[in-house]
Image (cartoon, rainbow, N blue to C red; front, top):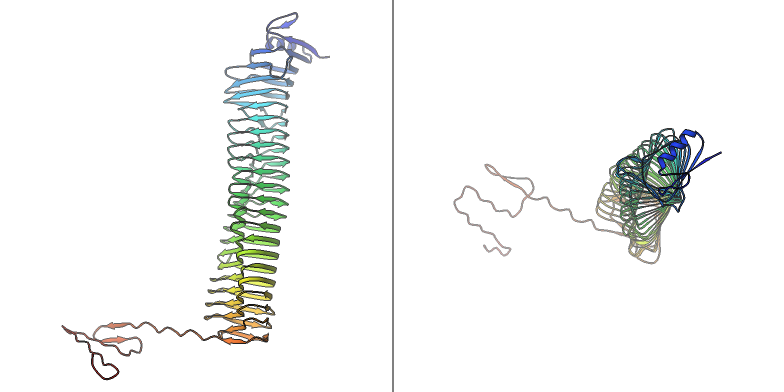
Amino acid sequence: MVARYLVSPQGGRRAYPDITSALAAAARRGRAALIEIAPGRYEEALTVQGEVQLAALGDPGSVVVSRPHGAVLDASGSVRVHGLVLVGREADVVGCRAGSLTVEHAEIRAHSGVGVHARANTSVTLRDSVIVHGRALFSGAVGLVERCRFVDAIDNAVAVIKGAHVSVHHSWIGGSAIHGVRVSGARAQVTGCELTGTGKAAVMADAQADLTVAGCSITAVHAEGIAFIEQSKGSVDGTRVTDAQHGVAVVSGADPVVRDCVFTECRDTGINVHASGRGRFEDCEVRDAGNIAVFATKGGAPEVHGCRIARGNVGVAVTDGARGRFSRVEIEDLTSVALRVHDGAKGVFEHVRVERCPSHVEARGDGGTTASIADAVFRDFDMSAVEVIGQSRVTLKGVSAERGTLGFGVGEEAQLFVDDCAVTAVSSCGALALGKGRLTARNLTVTGSEAFGLCGTDSARLDVVNSEFADCATAGASFQDTCGGRMVDCSVSGTRGVAVQDNGRVDLVSLRTSLPVVKQLAKPAERPAMIVNHYEGPVFNAEVHGAQLAWNNNSVIQEQTSEDGSST
């Protein structure tokens, strides 16, 4: 049976004048105790042991227990606190040393200290309560936080460390100077929460933590919405991040699974994977990213499946030795490139749809820079559907490009391999090789180019087999300068232009066409510059005509005979 004790500063029959005296009386009896506290202010430090409940008699907030410095409540045993306001400074305002502690409908104000400290091997529940300025620290403890508000923590609002296991449900966390929830070498579940205005990542997992986030809303944070670092793992489901620097960041070996999330209006990136981070991202959406929607760099290796990207600057960028696999990706209405692979990175793209972007694929870098694109559709590109430069290598299979300027282009020393692809309604060229670029195409179809179906210039090399070029306004194929290669079992059809503008350096084997093949005159070779080295006499490095020389003279008279024999 629970023994009841009444505390009232005004006194009264069988009332204790302060909480400490009531606790002492309960301890002497050694029974479960209910201590009911009348409204008022109590400046006390409470040490609560055993099975004790402290409850405000009035409305929540009517009982204030405070100290100018130091701890306010230290619990051991099975302790419950209901409806109190606890105020302290420069210490743990509420601490649980042993056993369990439950705080309900309470307010904890921690100025320059910890609001609630759950020490190792304890269990602490916070429910329907407000924690102002201080943080809830779970160190090796078990915790449950439900329907709480954390306001302007000077550190992390909720810290889960050193093997602790804590669940945070349906709570609001705002204005934390560092993180909203930090999980370090521990486990935590954060569900149905709203986090806003944090100084760093709203939710952080580090030191091999295990973090689960579900159904949360994160807004207006100064850094990442969610961050997994230092080999942490876990999952993020059904969460929305708005106005963060990065929507979700995965770094240094971390490997989470992120599903059905929305990252919108992120100031830099929506999904950011770098420094050997990994991660699987399924059915996510990134809108209005300030820089890059999905970014893998510096050894990052994400897998992205079912991603929708709209508006913003760059769609997917894989750079600086990163690698990534991307499938079922839809991208539209960007201001820059949709898919970028740079500087030793490797990207694999399957089932991709891109619409209304200036450039749809951009590959650039050394020979280790590779991209493979299969079953893709690129529509309405202002510049190019695919651009491959540097020494990079790109393979296209089952790719169609519709309505733009240039379909597929390769330049410098890069290589482009095209298989079963189609280009339709471009204004410049279906497939272009220039510089020292190499184009290898099988079963390529170009239809309705306003200029060329296929074009090679400079010293490019082309190997085009079993391909079709239809209704190209200027030429089905045009070979210029010293580009070379072969065109085998191809057809050119239509009523406009010519079949081939031939520079004589590309083998035309089994060409099927009713249009003319036009031999292009080679550009005259430039004469080498004449150099005269005058030592004891003139020395010429090329045949010279019409030159007039003089040496060892104080004065020179130059005379030239005109065609009619007269001297000038």
